Length: 255
Length: 249
Image (tube, rainbow over all chains, first blue to last red; front, top):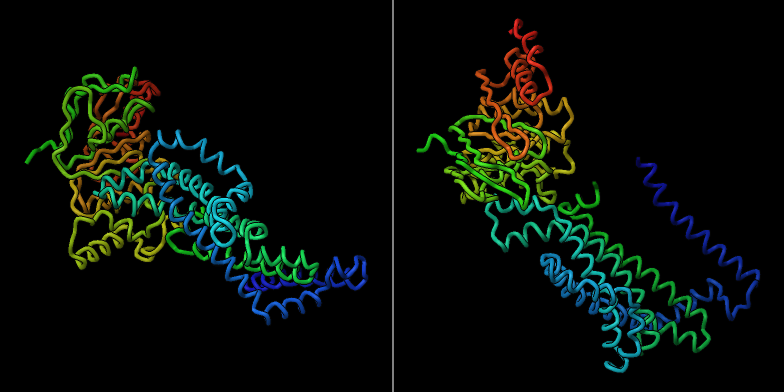
């Protein structure tokens, strides 16, 4: 068991190293010109340059701020809306087509309106991230509420739960595992959207940095931005993954 | 004090065009263990729902004059709570923390799950979960226990073990019990009185009494004879079989 877990930890690192090695070999063989296929060394140098100028940190902060604001707004409105719709069959039937419509609509389609309504900067990006995460979160919460076995509410009634307790001590813990999964999925979505949104409607942020690097033909900085985006995406998911380790939600993942 | 804490009198109930009960009457005595058997879909669970006032009859009267708890057919432990927390639901009325702890520990000892107090239901076996369900319903002060096919999801041997477990728990914590079951052996092994319901609209087609202390051996002649009688009543065996067995009794 212990041997296996060490192996499990080492294997991904080996795969990663091999990938970088292939990258290095391709760039050393000059299969593509350096200007369109930057070498790992060039990217490392670009990374150092970006860090020294402080731009990288500014971009990371800008992007993270927008994602946390937009995603946070979606969580604090989407989950209550989902709870309410999950508990009201008729309202659910009435709103579901509309919610499904917006869910199927790529949030990027809103970019022109976002710029027209909110200009350039934080606001349009926050709006786009909200549009990307709100609808999937509502849908996931509705589904989770609708799937709670009715026997739980019967038991709660038998043991004298108040209406507030039905919500806080039955509904919320019963939907927690599914909602946490939805949070992970939508946070990933929000992180995808922020990059795209900043390319067009931003003046800072990792998406903007990529666009700026492309305009300046600095492919090394472009790859540098891609690497940072990928790593932060993984870190965000790791943080949310911790939620699934709370003892009172383990049941949702283990059976 | 009323000697018959659970009564349905002349009750009729329909769901749309499906007539479940028509002028059904049944009274349960204090301290009695009554099992209700019958073909599936005949209204056994509905009868419990009438007793627990979850359903109201279309006509007739339902009396439930004492505090009642129910164990459901499906897994009804809260999966997000530990064994202790689930059982402690039955002690919500107690204000005093120390007393709650005392009763909880006593119950954990009774169901022999002290070392599983902080486990979650999904970490337990089916039989253990069922013990926790029973513990939650039996802890605290209730008078009546309604059991809706509580062991139906367990394997045969675990089911037999759970019957003994239930009998043992009831010796410590006596209750008036109504057990709905499709398991005729279970009814004969546990109940003082077995009520056989007919197809819908359900009426009482037979009543059998088993005058034998619990826990009972499954193969005790009186239990076996009762099983034969019930099966004959339900049309699965002929009376001749019963005659063949009776010399042993």
